[in-house]
Every structure is written in structure tokens, then in C-alpha cells.
Length: 178
Image: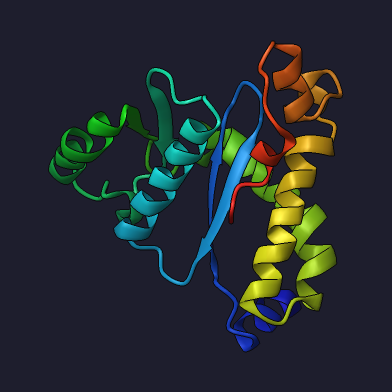
């Protein structure tokens, strides 16, 4: 509660956007002040562009999320229209998890717990402005992707796992501009 009040007092962006590759656990984070569809789509577009800049945008990218308005999924017709006009054109296959079933998106939910335990609880109380949040988040994302061992990956970091699978990526790939 104290950290939440601290974030509000310092007008820090209250929304975190997260995209994770479930095989490697590499992930990308961003923040916003509003959970709007435009922000959600902008985040997805930035991730897609980031992957493309690093030679990883071959073929279709599969994305799943909750059914909130920020992904244009409150109504089935709206979601299908967005899927056809937006995501299909970007080469992104979109799925929506069942309402009230966060376990369907267990990778993101688990990473949020890790964020709480290893990022927000130890560091948020020291952050007093948006730039500090972004700088610390880029550090956290880099650490999570490049150095933090994951038991499910044989105690490799996501970056080490990708390298072990033959991907040739510069370490800067792990520092998505939050």
C-alpha cells in the first residue's frame, strides 16, 4: 500500500505493459498513464518493430492477452475487426484468454509476481519521477533478460537460452526502450 501511495504521490505511470516469449522468457515492458487501446496497440507495434530491428520478425508472432478494452477485445465484433485490420496486417496472431481466468496467461502473471518481488518492492520507493522509473525499468528488463537465471530454462537467462538455440543477438536486444 505504501509503494502504491508513493507512486500516486509522484505521478508515476500506473500501467505496465508486458509481452513475453513463452519459449525463451525474453520479455518487453512499457508504461503508460492510461490503459487505452491506442497505448496497447502502440506497445505491440513497438515490440514488433524491435523484433524486426534485430532480425526476429520472420513469420507470424502469436500474442495473447486478457479481453480488456486496451486490446480492443471488450466486444467480439470489435476484436475481430481489429484483428483483421490491425494485427493480421502486422503478422500478429491475436488470442484472448477466457474472462476471469488469469491462469490462461500464466507466463505474464508469473512475471508480474517477479516484478513485484524483485523490482517494485526493492526499488519503487526510491523512484520519484517518470525518467527514473524508465531508467530503472530498462535496467531491470536488461537484468531479467540477460542475467537473471530461470529455473525453467535450465538456470540460463532468456538471452543465454536464445544464444544456446543459435540466435545471434547483440546484448542491446535485451534493453527494449520501456
